[in-house]
Length: 202
Image (cartoon, rainbow, N blue to C red; front, top):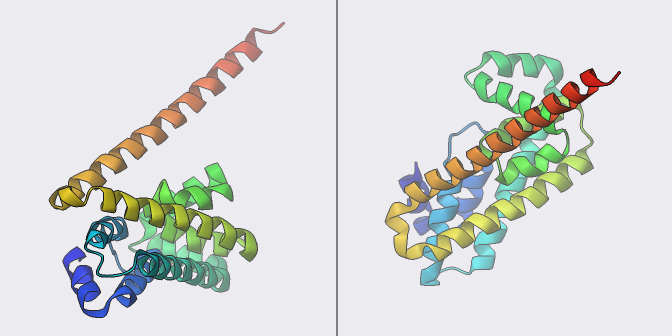
């Protein structure tokens, strides 16, 4: 998939990035968007295309992909939620549901860059639950800006190691996963300590 996207980028320019980010954020097509951003960031070293054009194409594609998911979820309602739960995307939809229950609206912002695999399915979910459109849009765009600018910059900075981009992504994902697990574990420990203190009170 990554080779196909890069070939399209070479042939059609930033329009290919717009399509790739849009498709990735709908969740319908499994586009490795994070690897695309890292690789394109590395390519920017050649200065064959203006970085601002790449950034704007990616932002517009991702934002419209988010809006697509939200609109479909809003129109489909509970019946669409039932369909998603039983579809091949059911596992990711369940993960998005658990994530949403834990973090609420602010989770939209963090899902764009901290746990990006769930973000396409979270779009449908928040549309189904009826979260206000303006709140969703502000949270998603702010998160997309951090995600896209961050990974384009990382790719640019590691351009000399472009052959190890996959390894770089794996290390970043591993670090983020470990951080989330640590925070979750610490929150459970705090709750257990609080309950223990409450139980000891006369």
